[in-house]
Length: 313
Image (cartoon, rainbow, N blue to C red; front, side, top):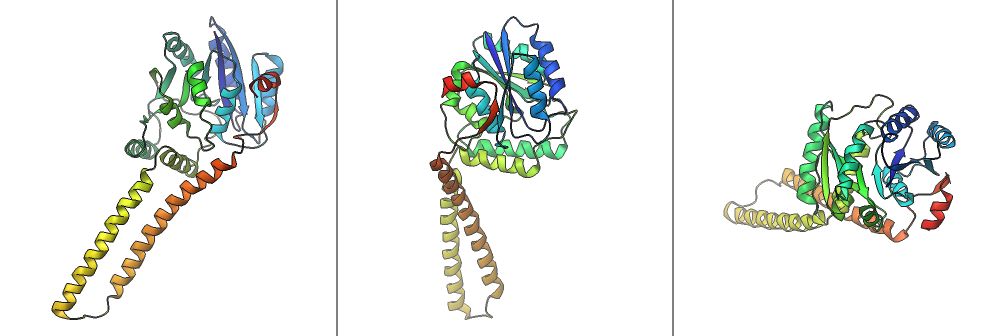
């Protein structure tokens, strides 16, 4: 068996050497071959230089470097697209995905599972972040057409069959957590203790996490659009009821002082609702716009996998 390890990297110069040592320490004792595919996602530090140095000293190290930062989704897609292994493992370079777990993931693959998934607990995470994450997953599972689990992310091993199914989904706006769940196949979940980052800083700011969460909600269902229809009917019914009650009050008691507060409140309420759902509709239209452009998910500036890339193309 050949295992391809796909490692998206963005500004990871502080940990890249240690990651290489740790994963080699684990894999050098394995009874199968492996290749390490580092995907440099437009890093602004010395990440690419360090990867090139590793590739120069170790023929098992391959790399793809993007022309700019295209995001982790593009990094994972590139690594999977050009991997040549029988199985593919996706993991981060920051050592929060422990290399020591790899033998268990491979064992699950050898037992016949197409997706062997690593699930972390929330031990050590900030309380606020853990609570927000739990709320988000509950909301996602109510809205979307697939089921997502808190603690399950990109750290997983895919069989060639599962990876090919994933690569056949060519949409531009990718939400891999949802795509992994959507393709199905036989799954095995392995739990592990959360590992805190020791070097460098997280690349996921609150705004990026919020945008990623919105991607997940919109990418896998049209329920927000359906909700806007239901809410539109509800608001319309409420407005008609209000008009009817006001008319009855006028007929029974006459006209009071002009309802300035009621007017302003109604304008603000209905104006806000309209803007919210215009934004939802606009988000869907914007995604259609990006899909119709059919732009590539990434642009490669340099790599050491020319032969494999040409074969895939």
